Image 1 (cartoon, chains in turn blue, green, purple, orange):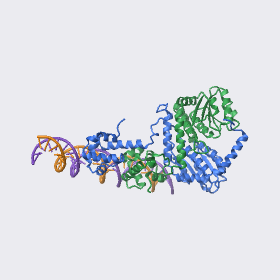
Image 2: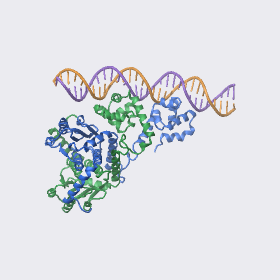
Image 3: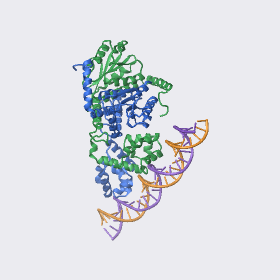
Image 4: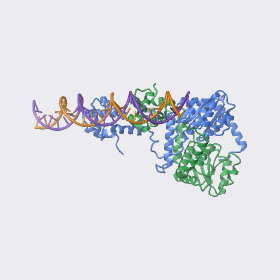
Length: 287
Length: 287
DNA sequence: ATTGCTTTGAAACTATGCTTACATTTGTAG
DNA sequence: CTACAAATGTAAGCATAGTTTCAAAGCAAT
């Protein structure tokens, strides 16, 4: 592998002249950011002239200052991106290019970016809404996100009362909105190929005074115009389809947050559920 | 404290235009290094014109591109010198102990371990089975994994013919097994609190000559005794529930792999599907 | 001290980057 | 369908960055 600029400087340090050593010191001092500005800036910081800088980077083996700077940029990028994250082989016994590794790479990056761009106060606000049993909760999704909405619904049912799942894909969904009241919460999953019926549903719910919570992709569903809270997820994947892993993560985190907030009440509900399971012998007794 | 460029972008994201969002995406994707080159480079990377970049940074509150870049440089410098940044904080503006960070930490670790323990040849074998249209494909899951099984079913339907979803939670599932033939594939999701009915289903399918594929947790469902292929996923989470994110990841990767293997045929099916969508006006025409 | 070599910076020049003005396209309301 | 407004890109011009040339200063050897 090629040397970093830092290593090269140290190697040839002895052969440097006075002004060049001065410059080298400044570069190394706040490496590598000090080299990110213009050549003039760097020269000034080191109290040398710009030609000195130009000559020095050529001694280091670069064709000119821009090339030197580009090299620095790449070094920073390598250091910034989580070392475990990039170019790691996730499934070690498979080749780097195996779909397992490629897909996981993309998903990890999605998760990282989703989290980086999330506003924790929005998240907390949403968790708060979901935890409030005074508000009835309606959950729905589109064609692709239907499974996610169902998953959230399943868990929310255990955690709290007054939860309903709406199939926005069925044309009977207006029935489900009949009972909706001012202050109720409608949580909608909507990712690209945004569906008309889901948008209508949001409009109607909004008009009836419901709070609209939206979990969408980075391009944002048109529903965001009605949303009181909205969370954006990265969904890109090396596939003909998008990846909803980051949305699943967010959903589960919401479940955990709401459950934490309402643990006292949830505990009773879970016990009651266990009792019913026992009576119906759904699960194996001994695993 | 003043907002970082990242925060500002997220705040005004809603008011951005198409080209600007495209640009915002590129900036956030490899933030903040993507903004360290020249305005031309950044514009090219985002496939927009340089004036679009210039206009956007003005919207963000900077006098021009150089000032924007200078702000980025200072952010990098701050992050580099800040030792706390070393310990991974996923949602940077939330405290380390925020549920967002704790949960994501656990999930990332799950994914890592899941991938590390997966046998690529098993994965490939499973993908091969799923891609084989000579074998009818049955997909099912339990109480918690039902959503996953439905998600996989939805995608597989687009990719290939002869796919069916079985609700193992309904007691009508034996009906669905009537048609099953020697060599057909039954893919079962089963995680802890392994359900009796799912186990029965596996037994019966096996006896009728079906290949059993299993996606389970690290403790392994009892179904694994019947399984021809089985993949284990880590599902631990700091919550009263398990996390199925790693299973979702694996499912999506399977989808991608099968789709890649059958792209020729899948392409036609997707086109046919698009035609039907067009006729039913399910999606918004202009996004 | 003088010579000649090396180092250094000032200044001119060239190339690239940034901005502005304007034309084209795209979307929308009447 | 037309007209208008918004968004976006093209191209020109202006500004800054980077390089090269050259002359002056420093320094060692005679």
